[in-house]
Length: 131
Image 1 (cartoon, rainbow, N blue to C red):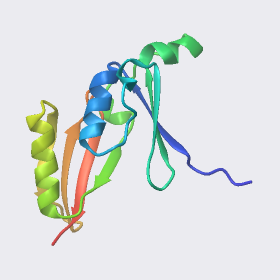
Image 2 (cartoon, rainbow, N blue to C red; image 1 turned 90 degrees about the vertical axis):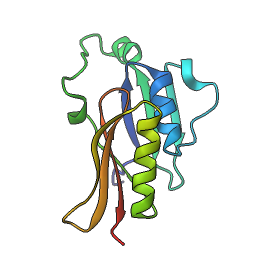
Image 3 (cartoon, rainbow, N blue to C red; image 1 turned 180 degrees about the vertical axis):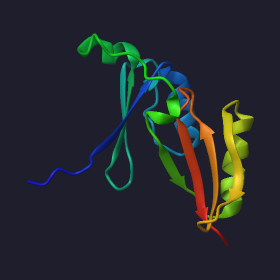
């Protein structure tokens, strides 16, 4: 058997805030999950996104401590349908109170690109092929 990537895990300090952020990006997160210690959402291709509270992680790894610099822990990238959608999603997330990190720009590699920070400080990229 060859190992295959099955899930991406996020450790969060605030489950409700993290789930609300990723719901805004279209993830189908189970209703009523905001107070759960562990949450899973399966993406259309079968890849799962997992969330655990810091307390949950400490329950099986008592030595765990939150890494410094959220952006270095995990990086997620969401493909948008168009450059205009990158701009619109970025603005919607910032308007919802999330921190913009890099405003949308036309990257030299041929994409419209932006970065927003999730509630735990992890960079979430938004991108689309340039028109």
